Amino acid sequence: MQQQPKTKVIGGHTYQVGVLPGRSGFAAYLELAKMLGPSLGSVLGRVKLDPKLGTDAQALLAQLLSQELGPIIEAAVTTLAGALDTPKVMEMVDKLAAVTLVDGRALVVDGDFAGEAWLMMQWLAFALEVNFGGFLSSWLARAKLAGDGPEAQAGK
Image (tube, rainbow, N blue to C red; front, side, top):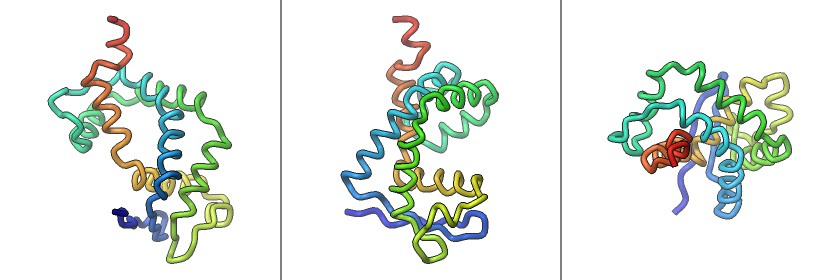
């Protein structure tokens, strides 16, 4: 059963993002995990989450946003910047662009986002959300609940 495309207006344009095909989507998921894994690990030690929240993404996000985010974001960005592989990121962008329509026509990354890096990042965040929606919140919650965060590792 294929998930329906999702639509969002970003920067005055309507983006419709579909899901990646099975094999391509799974390969992209693995690449995303490789890129984000180290960053998430560095963040886990700084995030205090209530284990009673389970994997409820909205509750986890609300609790995360109630914390001092500066040190958390700094740790994540520092680690993520070192983990990003530009060709792999651009491969992910191309895969997601292939399942995206903008204002009813095929997205052309180089044309539609020329001089619009912020707009591109917003589209990319939406496309990642459509295709890997629960990845971040589920991984974060499972790691904290299972005691896989850095603070748990230090005690082992």
